[in-house]
Length: 255
Image 1 (cartoon, rainbow, N blue to C red):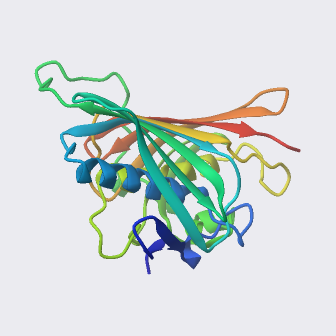
Image 2: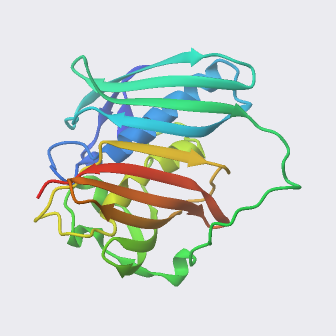
């Protein structure tokens, strides 16, 4: 069973595998972020702009989503032949729950100067299996396979993959696949037990300098909490060939 079933061009039904970690009767936001990325890429390809690649997607999380039907929409805010800004929305019952903005960029041959100073992380087979359901409930967490090396609370390197498709019977791009997993970062190396302190994220921003590939997504993650109820989960993202980009999530921390 996939995370979502398509009902029409713009309407989807969430399945039980989207069940949330903070509230199991609501959706975990991770699959919804992947769905919006898929909506953006599908619209791009339909318009004949498939030469453009996703450089950044920023998501603002405006509210929660029940495990049920959701509506999506997409529009081009800044059209262009080499750069576009696209906005996609996902909601329920006429209310937006997530707004995404994606920069789509034309690719150029920069193979002769490519490089990064981000440090690679150990391969998935070199890290121990870890069961995230020992910390979190919900259908999405239960669907994830995790391998992790935790240095200390709030600091870990780990790999995540899921055997479940985002949508059944549709080709899902690598960016949408990764976007459907990265929100999990906020719960994979907690500083404080979620039974004691709530720390949901209000946003997520994904930057990619290289298109990811393969089933596994790697995270080099640091969680920080300030003195006045604000936190940050920041991750350098990897595939099995090396670093591909970074993601950040701002947290509202509530003892």
